[in-house]
Length: 92
Image 1 (tube, rainbow, N blue to C red):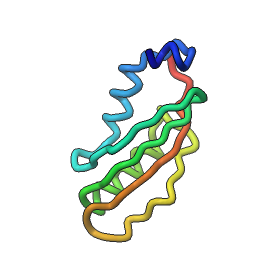
Image 2 (cartoon, rainbow, N blue to C red):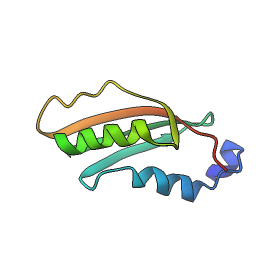
Image 3 (spheres, rainbow, N blue to C red):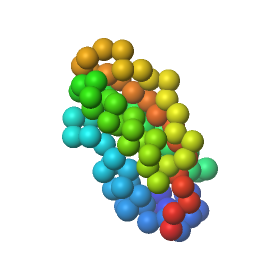
Image 4 (cartoon, one colour):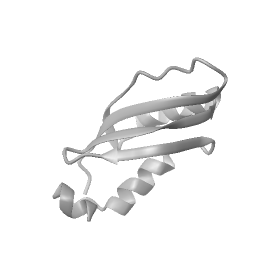
């Protein structure tokens, strides 16, 4: 299981649900990777510039994550690809 492989006592269903709750409705996630050290990589496509900016704000303000970074820019109006990296805050 994920919990066994990461060797922590996190409640993964809660962590993943909370991460997904950050996403605006018109954002599609193509991958969500969590490494042993808690590093998270989230990639996908935002349908609109507004949803891209909402995602950016939600990721950076989330109490679940620290060190949120992205090189993605809202360079067009629709179908904006994104990739974020962050580290999970050590939650039970």
